[in-house]
Length: 205
Image (tube, rainbow, N blue to C red; front, side, top):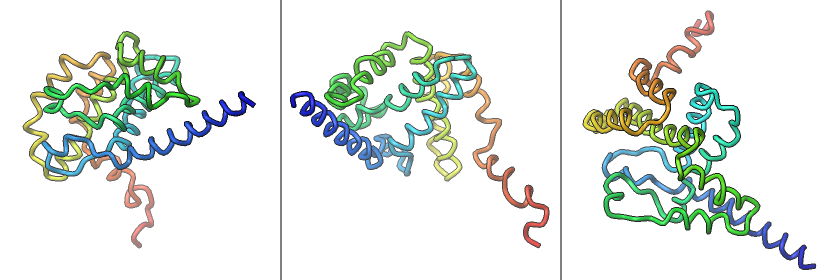
């Protein structure tokens, strides 16, 4: 009976966890204040960080892609309780993200994320952790170019800061290579080269 009760409690916590993760779709990133324009929410940011991390992992020859993806999936999870901290807030606000992570995963089926996965990420000692942090940074540079496409002038003003990130903050060569290549690809290239007018000879007839 005690075992069944423990399993029941864990199942309840698992469901609570899933609702908490769903709340990420409602969490705006705090740099909307400085950008003055709509940008990706936390959940949207996390999705692209996962893909970015996977690309970097393959370019760096990482074998354990599962670890990288787990780390990328959970890298901002504390923000469901701490909120997002932009580059102004960070000067003054000190969030206890480690405690938030422990509380989020407490008594769920995923407690190892707090004790192992995110602990490793926070230490920045392994290649997997460095790749995920690089992906987190690179997503900002991708979004800057998307916002510029929408007419925002702020990305141009932030260029020197983003170059500083490239020179001082990126860990892996794969991340630096990707950063260096960003301006060679237009934000719209993916759909301008894949649309029906180029792929279907009879389109529009």
